[in-house]
Image (cartoon, rainbow, N blue to C red; front, side, top):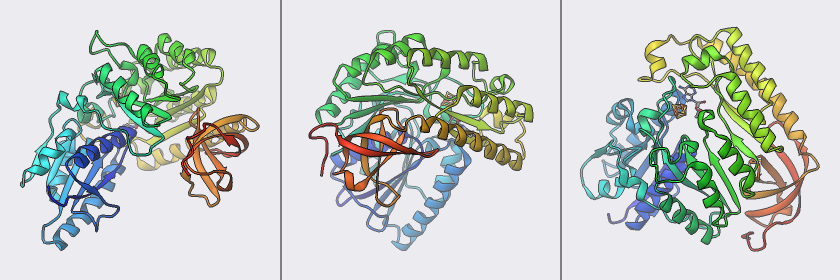
Length: 442
Ligand code: 5AD
Ligand code: SF4
């Protein structure tokens, strides 16, 4: 692997960002150099997402460009594809079309070193328990980092490819998780996000492991200043977990709890296991224990068979809960999923029109909820300059994106700030003081 110049391009969720970091660490340990552009690279690795049609289209168009680059260089250019799309036959067909040399499914990404040592195409779509034993080193200079707790998903929501791309739930050994957290804290990381498709299923697959509620307490005891986790499933979001959040100051009062639909009929068709009343009861319990709760969700509109009345129930549920923010998606029929096989897709116009109405509702509530923060003091973890000129971008303990005047910020770090303005998507603050001595890297 002499003179390996690598560019990794990551699509999709936070699990993919973590996986890209894991793979980058494996490559760095083998002497790879990382470059900014495709032109400088001789190995480009695309970490893919397959959850909806759109990210698949993006991967295809990127692979088209990479295929041209490979032709331009007379074949002296390696194209890699990893992650969820690589795990699916759909992705493997795409990989063949575009001349991908190295293909690693989401459960085989630790094989990257082995893949590059062989001077021939390398494909592996297995799921290997050793993957969970890899403890990637802290990302250099980062204040915020991810730690994977559990891979895979044992639910079988009918629209979702994840159970096939990431396999069944496998919790990482708690000692590995705690060791990784310890190393991050020692390296100066102030915020850790625990990751899993269903973090609250942690430990269910091994009775000798702590459950998620206990693990939260154990991780927090290692001295991490801020602790977050995504994603949770309403089904096993137990009172024990709610208590653990309430009793652990490092965990902000922030929960992302995907509801997907407000209609029982659609929830049943989605095989979501719970019903609207159950979700509302969990929210009530959360708000009782966490009075300052910031609650976000995922919603799919236009699921097959969704009537105007079903959709109204989603809008009503939104009003009843008043989510702080939501990720909203038009249903995308994914080949191989039960809903793709069994149900007929609604017309695109119907889905788009409903999505637009839901977005209006979300804007209304997000503005309402964000305005309640005006005048409050928060702690902002600044990452760097914002897209908006003269502002720096960060997020507070409850995960609101917060803009602070760039002139008041010395660099990435923690700042105490007062919120002065709010839009549906952002809070705007004024810096009171750097919050943690030594955390500001000029
Ligand atoms: N179509 C639209 N949205 C989907 N999601 C998952 N699968 C699909 C699909 N086929 C959404 C869900 C999930 C989020 C990560 O992506 O809302 O919570
Ligand atoms: Fe997909 Fe449902 Fe599992 Fe989430 S819980 S990853 S939506 S199958």
